[in-house]
Image (cartoon, rainbow, N blue to C red; front, side, top):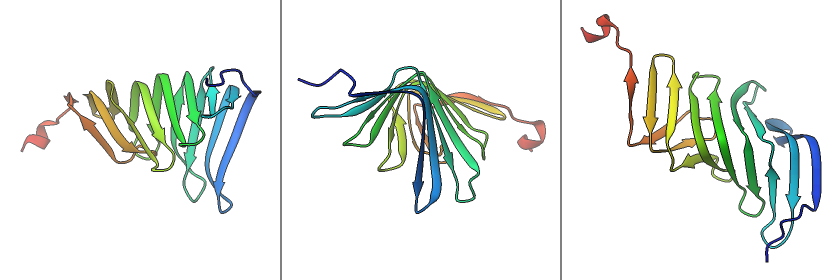
Length: 154
């Protein structure tokens, strides 16, 4: 039987991830539960914000949602409810209700409806795969609206 009672509860959480003294990302959440047992996980029942940074400590992307669950052994995070991913370099914005983030492969993916907003286009799809910074995106069963200027047609 899996544990469901938190071994630890933390409020006002801010976790800084670094590699070789280089800032990689910052996770903040108003509430975090750490659950033990055979398949330990960390739950963010009141939402979370994950910010990723480049080597110059510039903010590259943000991921926010109303709920998150990180499976410790597999380093897989499941994110739900009003999921938003923003790439600050490209201006791309992802809206969806469910997303997985694999920390080992540094990929995000899902198999539910997605909307991607860019400056002159709105794209919808039934699922996606992308890198964690939301720079390289693959959308499946794509459809959308793209604004075309008259000079683009010539």
